[in-house]
Structure formats: structure tokens, C-alpha cells
Length: 437
Image (cartoon, rainbow, N blue to C red):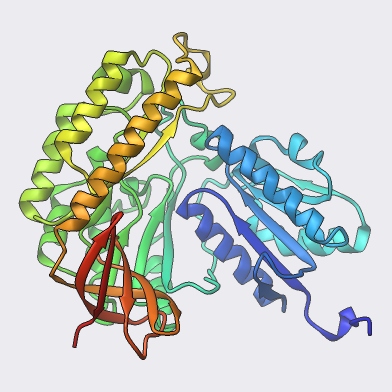
């Protein structure tokens, strides 16, 4: 029997690529569709509307975005495929030429997305809505489908214009969410049962500088920690020069402020950092790590490292590798340089041959695995608090405050709960243990 489409709500599925800000954007779009009566379903399920929230920060991200768009169309050629996010903002002409794409919406058109979908459904036309990015923060509700942690977006945009980065061009100027709006959103998430909030932003450390009166990220963190029902607060990523003494002190004195910071390094060579347009030196990064460890001894510091930036000599790469070994960070995201059209670095001479990039990448990936295991090993035999995210029968997967994955064995496990676990084994950077009373 053919299902009568009018007898059920329309179904919408989302696929998100890229950063945690994109995940927040998807949650905001999901809330807008839910308010219109749409049913939110998994991307692998049949849907009437597929929304692909794209990323274009690297060549690989752009390629994966195109693959996701094609997959949505192949899954249901009669569905309406919507493409939004940074790729749509950067190159709407290319996106609109892909098979099956009916709506192209830039990063400044989230609020209009349900209306665009309705118009496309009624008219049968392809719609392209790419406009100037708003100069003020768009305060939208967010709906996190099937998640145990809430990502709380408090800032958008970037002003740094690193020479390799496309983000300022597709995310616009810095703009902060007003403090009271952040507190209201946090209160709503806590009332919904979330026990961990993750503060996110394109350039999180600049939070509040554009507000009147101006605020700091540390002030925001301090206000959020006033919620007694908040069990965990985490920062998604922060630049080296924006880790202030006030932030460090808050983390030192309140264990709910998770002892984990993701602080991009990008390169361990000062000349490469200068060519990248980064605003710190390796000495400053090294000194920051020392200050953090003095205040919070077990802190997990993770980072981003780019391999093969134009002009990266073998000596420059060796300095990066030596610095990473010296710092013994808890983890790192290692990726190859990807020229982004329109950025200054795309015109730089000294392109590193791809076979050499692959060799350097492999060396750092091996180092990443070594450092991750070494850091995780320190928790062997200790009790750790775990936020359960997935549960199957008598086994669960969760995260420690230090952002380590933990496999938990025990009965009566349920997602979204905080449990105490005695760590009995460590393998490949993952902790294993049983519930500890």
C-alpha cells in the first residue's frame, strides 16, 4: 500500500561535515524544521528533505561534502536536497550544478531555510539564497538529535585571516551572543537533561569583545559555572594567545570546567608560523603549556598540526616533530596543507611535493598514536568520571573529563548518565574499565 504523504509529517534528515560550529548550525536548523512540524530522522533513513551542511576548509572536506550531496540524491531521487554551510557560501554556482540539488543556502540563510524548502517544494524550481553574512549574532534555538552533550554556540566569525584559511571569508566578522541569551540557552539545555555543555565558536577566545559593554570568555565561563545543575563545561577550541590567566584559574579551582583544551599549534617552526600569519611563537606556545600543567597537572592539551605548508623545509618539519615530542600533548589532529582558492598562501612558492607531504604526515600520525597512548596510560588503575554516550547491552562508550574515550562494562547503563569507572586497561588511547561503586 502506498503511504499517503499527507497523513504523516514530512521527514527531514541532516548530514554535517566539519567543525563543532557546523554541528551547532545543524542543531539550529533542526529546531527550525521541528517547529514547522517536520520529523527529524537519521540521514540513513528515508526522508523527504535531505540537508547537507558542508565544509570547505580543506580539499578533502570539500570532496566529502560533494560525496554526501550525491549520496543524498541517490538515496531518494524524489527527495528535496538542500545544501548549506561554508561550501554553499563560497561557491554556490558549483553547488547548484550538482545533480539533485534543489536549494542552495549560504551561512547567512539558516533562518530562512524552512521557507526556502517550502517554496522549492511548491514551485519545483531550484533556489539559491547566498547573501551577505549578518553583522550581529543570530540567536536561534538548537535541537540536538540523539546527543548526550549540548554544543552551545556563543560566537561566530573570525578576524585573523591566517594566510591559508578560507574561514573568515565564509563565516564573516566576529560577533558574540549576548550574555543573557547564552545563559538562557544554557538553562534550557540543562532543563532538557544535558549534563555537559561545550562552548563553541569560530574564534571562541574572542567572545565578548564586540559586545557593549565588552566581556571576556572567562567571565562567561564563570557565569555558567554558577548553574548548580551543570556537571561539566568544556571549550571546543581556543587560540594560544587567548588562554588567559583568568581561564586557567577557573579550571584550576572548579573541577566541572573540564581539564581539556584544544589549542591549535599548526607548526613548530617560527618562520612557518610567520608565513601562516599566526600571531605567536613556539616559545609562547611552550610557555603556555608549562603554565597550564603547573595549574592543572593532568590537563589534556590537544592540538592541530598542518603538514606541507608552502616553504616547509625538512628542517622546519624536523623542528615541528621535535617540539611535539617535547610537549608530549594528549592528542593531535594532523592534516596536509590544502590550498584554498583566494587565500594568500595559495599563491606562495615552495610547494612541498605530495610524496614528501605523505611521508611527513605518516611520521606525525605515528607520533600522535604514541603520545595519545602515553597520555592515556597515566589513568591506569585510577577512577574516572565518564559521561556515557552510547550503550549496547552491558557495555557503554563515553568520555572522561580529559576527553578520553572510555569503554565501560556493567549493568544498568544508560546514555547521558555520569558514572564512576575503575580503569583496568588502556589500549590505543582508549580506557577500559568496570563501573566502580
